[in-house]
Image 1 (tube, rainbow, N blue to C red):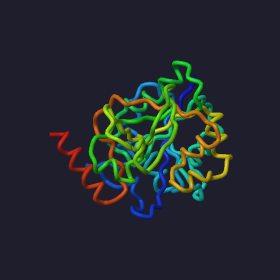
Image 2 (cartoon, rainbow, N blue to C red):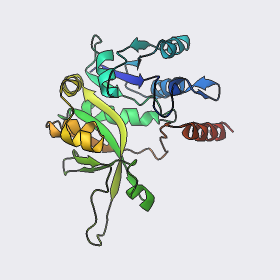
Image 3 (cartoon, rainbow, N blue to C red):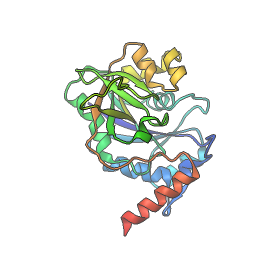
Image 4 (tube, one colour):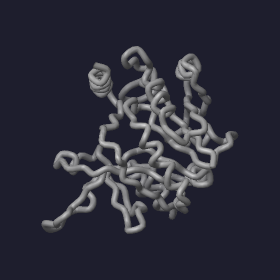
Length: 246
């Protein structure tokens, strides 16, 4: 089973243009993500899928492998699919390019079910959340799963909703790292945007609406994977990584 990790890295961003190249303690953010991927066990190859020569040049300068992709892609999955179109890969891991503090263990966790023989087309992660502020935050995407460990639904709303006081009530946040079979990834990028995907703004709902089973693993990682969406997020990551170096 050949496993390829792909890091989509787009230059233009509404909130933070050029963020893959943002400096974090002397290295561009994309290099921090690359270094995290290299620490993960089970990846046979790592690619950065980008739409901009500036990112490609930086990746190649630090010894990484970059693939140029169409700048008009609507989602990271579309960019990943183009990047692996002519590459030998059985399993493809979509790794967010704006999470420089990603725990490499998470990559191993989404690969593991495929090595164990799962028949799901996709694998992703979840972690339990406890704060009321996270329950009501639409930026914290929730997921509920069935007895088979596969996703029933993802939502920006609180799910499940506790209609009455319920003992052992658990809420899980979806952690946005995905592994797909090559066949599943190809299928998803050929399907149109689905109604629920459009309403919630969550592309994984396209898979559920079209009958794709998504295995959801509860991560053992306790650290916070911070997505850098703003300059304030960047400053926070710089501060946290600087503290780790002390």
